[in-house]
Amino acid sequence: MIEKYNYSGPRYTSYPTALEFDDSFTEEKLLTSIANSKSDKLSLYLHIPFCAKLCYYCGCNKVITRHQHKADQYIEYLAAEIVKRAPLFKNYLVTQIHWGGGTPTFLSPDQILKLSSLIKEHFNVADKGEYSIEVDPREIELSMLDTLKEAGFNRISIGVQDFNKKVQIAVNREQDEQFIFDLMARAKELGFVSTNIDLIYGLPHQTPETFAETMQRVLDLDPDRLSVFNYAHLPARFAAQRKIKDEDLASPQQKLDMLHQTIETLTGAGYQYIGMDHFAKPDDELSILQNEGRLHRNFQGYTTQEECDLLGLGVSSISQIGDCYAQNQKDIRPYYESVDKLGHALWKGCSLNRDDEIRRVVIKQLICHFDLDMAQIDEKLGINFEEYFSEDLKLLQTFIDDKLVDITDRKITISPTGRLLIRNICICFDVYYREKARQQQFSRVI
Image (cartoon, rainbow, N blue to C red; front, side, top):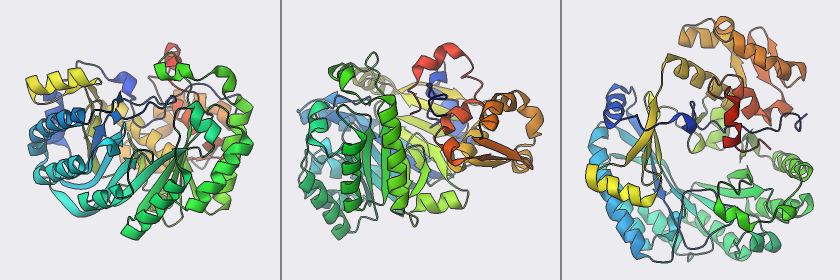
C-alpha cells in the first residue's frame, strides 16, 4: 500500500508551498500584512548558515568555512536587519525563538551572547517562552551549554543522525558517542526544559539492524522529542550528495522497514507519534496540544504556538505573517547586498487569497491532527465543505477505497497506516500541486 503511494510530495510546512513564492512580492505587501495581522505574539527564527564541515547528505542552506571572522561579518548584517525589522513588531511579545542552520553553535560563545543581547535589546522578549537552538556535538566544548543557558536558551536540538561509525564516515559526520551522552546529562543538570535528537534513516550503509541499534542508544539518551527524517537523495539538486554512492543506499523496502521499526520502538517506549517524522513524550507540549486539537505547523515543523506570527531573520529565512509568506535572499552575497542597499533582505513571497486561506486551514488540520470535522470547518470558514471541496473529495476516494481514510458523519479520519501517507492525502486539497510537471520538485514521501 505504501509503495503504491510513494511518490513525491511537499512537506506542507506552509500552504501554498514555497514553490508558489515569486519576486513580485514587495516590501509594501509585507508591511500591509504586518499592519493587518491580528496577532500580538511573535516567533523569531534566526538562520546561522555556517558549518565547519560538510555533511554529504545535507540539503540545508549553508556556508562551509573555518574562518570565524565570517560569522562576525554576518552578525553585523543580521544586526542591521534586526534594527530595520524590530520596530515593525514593537507591539508584539516574542514568546518563541529558534536558531537553526547551518550550525548555530559554529558561533563562538562571545558571538552567541552578542547576538542574543541584540535580540533582547530590539524585541520585547518574554521572560518565559520557548527558546531553542540546534547543536552540532562535534565542534563544541561541553561548556557551550553554559553559554547557551546564559544567552537565554531553554531547549536544545542535537544532530546525531546515526550512531553507526560506518554510516558516519560515509556521510562525513564522525562524532564522539560518549560526548553526546555527556551533553545530554549536562543539559539536564543546567535545567534545559526540553531536548530533541535528530536522526536520519536511509543514509548509506544503514540497514534495519544497524538503525535499530542506533534507536536503542537514543532511548538510553532519553530525549523529550525526536525527529526521525527520511533521507531524500537528490544529487541533481545538492552537489554534496554526489559523494554518496547510490549502491550504498538502503533499498525502498529497507527504508520502509526502518520507518516501521522506528515507530514501533518509540511508541512501545512510550513516545507519542506526532506525525511524519516527529515523536514526543506524552507529557511534552507537542503531545498535549495534539491531543487537545491545538497543534500548529510552520516552517520549523510541528510547533506549539499557533497564535504567533513568524519572523525569519538571516539568509534564506522565511516569515509567515498574517496572510503572507516572505523569504529572504537565499545566498549570502545577495543577502549582504540587499541589506546594504535596502536595510532588509526580502527576496520573494506570496500573499494568500481566500481560497489559499481556506485550504491552509484544512491541510493544517489534517497534517497536525489526522482528522477533520466538516461541520466545524463550515462554521469557522463560512463554507459548505462538500460543495467547496467536491473535486478534492473525488481525489480522496482512492484513499477511502484503500481504507486509509474514512468519512463518516461528515468527519474525515485518517487510519494509522494513512498517517504515514498524510502528505499524499493533503495533496488532494492542494490546487497548485495538480500541475503534475512539478512533482520532481519534491522528495519522496517514504
